[in-house]
Image (cartoon, rainbow over all chains, first blue to last red; front, side):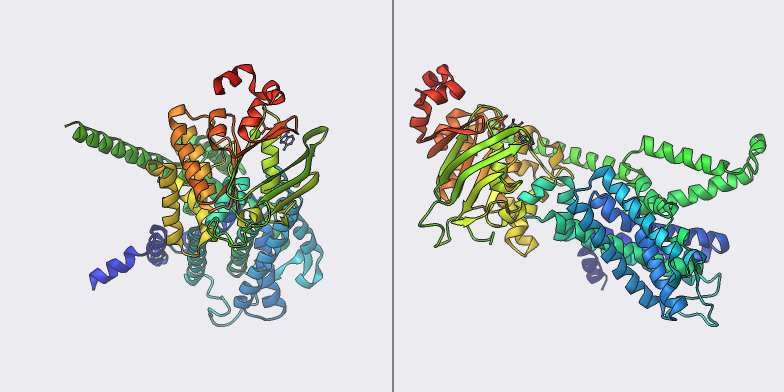
Length: 360
Length: 258
Ligand SMILES: Nc1ncnc2c1ncn2[C@@H]1O[C@H](COP(=O)(O)OP(=O)(O)OP(=O)(O)O)[C@@H](O)[C@H]1O
Ligand SMILES: [Mg+2]
């Protein structure tokens, strides 16, 4: 019995095993965290998933997006419109939003590829696309323009309507499901042939083309997955917040909040965005409470508005300067280098051993 | 398409050259990098392509491999016009190439690099891995199999370039200075390997500055100079051609070879 379980587990890759473990451990989070702490945990999980979705493009495909609010907002507004205006379940909104996010990604990917917008130009284009949707949303009356949309309150809790009592742990579980599905999807994608083609195109487009890979196709797949998974996050965010308006959906601060965990944790690494999300949100909480209640000798800092943000910003700059691969990325790289050295040394010593034998 | 093993196609251009380059010119702004180049390559032969730095050899490779289209002129492969076909389609037609400026996938291991190429041959990942290992052994990179490709020394990267191109099981192989940067002792096994590859029916276009290798391998040689064809023919004829000696080889070379 135990042996078959072991055998079954050994057929599963390391990331999947870790996903299972994290999922199981996270089940107990609501037991230890309630109220504002559970809110912190919920946001960590949400932004871990969003940034992981962003990482498909920015990290694995080398397409740094500064406008992921576009996808996020599409998901949030697809859900909000269907629910608040049409009375349709957010489960449908989730699917429609994800498809919308993927299609918008294909459009963005095709246009930027068609006009060969790379590097800074690509980054600016993503930003412009998000701003464009922001301006449209502000004026578009079917989704209530600048006023925004609210989740209609229901009497009873329901998974189908993704609505629970205000302090229910189910919101946390909802985000957890989103995170786990996102991680599993990304792990499957990046382990597949398609995923390896995406990385090959990022590493060297000419070399990849010369080996028969269509770079446009690889890029479009990456952008579509990233767009769909990010849009899904918009659905859950809307349900969690009970409210959406253009700045909350398409605002540049949303794009920054989505990309920061990946940058801080480590772009192009599987666990970077998750580590980054935990670090950033906890760091944000700590700096806020530090300024609210500074230690005795720093009491003059108390309540200085904006100081927490400055402190937070300084810490971020520090991390980016000293750990350019990100926190997790740096650790993973060190570990990888050490492993390579060991392999090399082992090989060298086994060669020496063989030589000695021959000499005998 | 790519799984067709080299030389096994019964209809493979039995009645014409494998590659036919007709009046190809390529202009970069004010620079005519290729000017009216025409020659053809028979199936199963090795064609040497030589000329001084900046002669247009790599540019010609880029035209044949689909990196960019020629400004004018035509490239035909197995009798079909392939001018301007994008490079990933060229690869699936069986045209493999190496890059003079090596382009490893730096975030991948050597094995993963080669497997990207062998994926094109089979739907099974396992099979692609086995094929990749076979190619890695062929070029003598076994020791580096699981090392990061970004860390390979120059000689290793040259071999990796060759390994990846071979991983495609190409019918036509474009080799851009695969021997450059290798010490003479390292060249010999690679030259032997190229002979072995030719014996399996693979056609090659070989850009090389190491004349001894060009002479040993080529069935025919084309000389480019300032984008123009200076001479073409058998290795002996070409190397004795006074224009070639003046433009490229130099007097001493003649004595060295002769
Ligand atoms: N993409 C490009 N854009 C502009 N000019 C180019 C480009 N590629 C090549 N050239 C120019 O075309 C000419 C031919 O270059 P090419 O690389 O084909 O020479 P080569 O024969 O391969 O030389 P080498 O022996 O040094 O590799 C050179 O003057 C080069 O600067
Ligand atoms: Mg060249």
